[in-house]
View 1 (cartoon, helix red, strand yellow):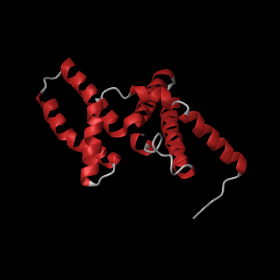
View 2 (cartoon, one colour):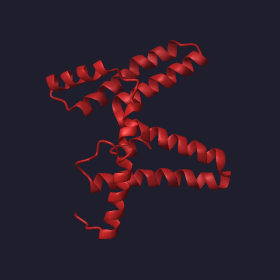
View 3 (tube, one colour):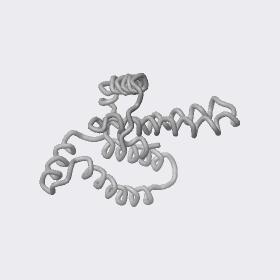
Length: 159
């Protein structure tokens, strides 16, 4: 089913999407935990087995969770375990989601800020509303720009 949106609404959505895409050059350098040689190996492996690169990255990220979980279980509770958890989680996010890992950071920081700054009666409503609006905007993006999904395509996953 195809629905045509009114021109002003379409212009507003397009303007919002272009505004978000204007941040892409600033966000791209934040993917620092994935070494460059990993990209070349993943691309070679994807070509060899006939997978697209993103699917292979998701699959490898899933498989990496098991050995990382075993390592984490072996670590003693305390600072070392927290550092490993943080770095391992950030690596997996950057490896599987690339530049889109920033959406996880945005939603987390916004939710924490709302809980810290707003009264409880307001934050218990404001946080879910914010996350739903953020996710809805991601879905609108996918519908309006189906060919240009790389930057905002998995908001539903990270929210």
